[in-house]
Length: 424
Image 1 (cartoon, rainbow, N blue to C red):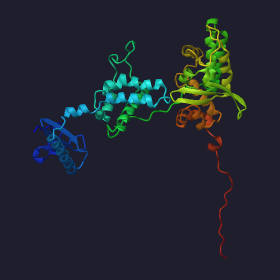
Image 2 (cartoon, helix red, strand yellow):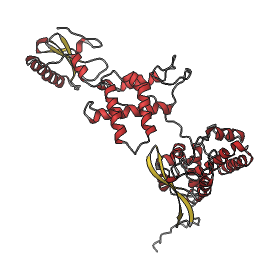
Image 3 (cartoon, rainbow, N blue to C red):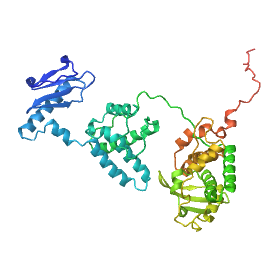
Image 4 (cartoon, rainbow, N blue to C red):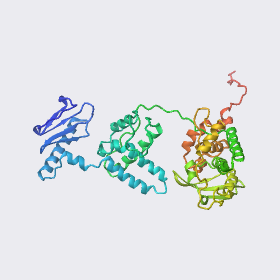
């Protein structure tokens, strides 16, 4: 019998059935393993037992099962067993087919495409050929080390023609890759290919500082929309239409709280001007399509006027008014918006965080909190969670602090000692 004892202590080897099989334990594992040499092949099996006597009993049952399979001619070789187990690439392929179908209408196509890109670029090249059961916590740690090692050449799986620039992934990028990996492993768990999920948490991780999102304070927001209005009034004829669109874009976004991708998907048929009876004013009711699927948003009254201007603004080339299925914001305002922020020195906040069009959404949420909006209703209107709002927005809004509860004082008065009656 061929006896392999790599990384084992000879004292931890216990033969069974007269040496036809044996039980051993590796130095770094608490579990006993069973091994046997049968029909010219080595077989290994984990007993999942830490007690020796229990492990021997499991190993005996396992060896008798092997002998029974060999007697009837159905015993597969170790190579055939490994080949029969699905690989990570096969499970990932099935996951993408299921995910795209089951999340139809609930996840934006771009979000689904993100999982596909992360699999193609990083996860499949590293895990693809492994049997799904071998994607362990240690292997996931090796993946993290690989991703955090500075690259020396361009990723061969990338499909763009950009020049190679060595760059480490941002923490959010690596987090999204682990999210995709977890979804693939959950697919394997549901069909019984693995017994449980490995530990995917990042080791040696310290508590990260919770920083607020870059936004525009009331004075900064006033400076911003005055600058966009002035720019629209003084822009050259060939740039005037785009400048006017940018001005209305800033007002619209800061009064609706839409994400930039949601605004890009927005069409005029998704927007309705209604009269709100509770507030006795006109608002917009918007059917939003974005990364959270389809949701609804009710704007403030400040979004109505810029939207009416968008409806009445003719297209620059044809002179036609927007149609019902036209985008509300055709084209992109990124370059003009960033150039304007740099010109008025609002591109970075005091913590040196860059402001983008996403900052208009953060501004909307902060303004609503400052006005005393209900956090739960605000979360529903912004298609996010209460936890996200409390974590990234409410902590730095001074209006969220109630002075009456903070500076409360006990009533002052003279304390008089209690004097018991004395017996006469």
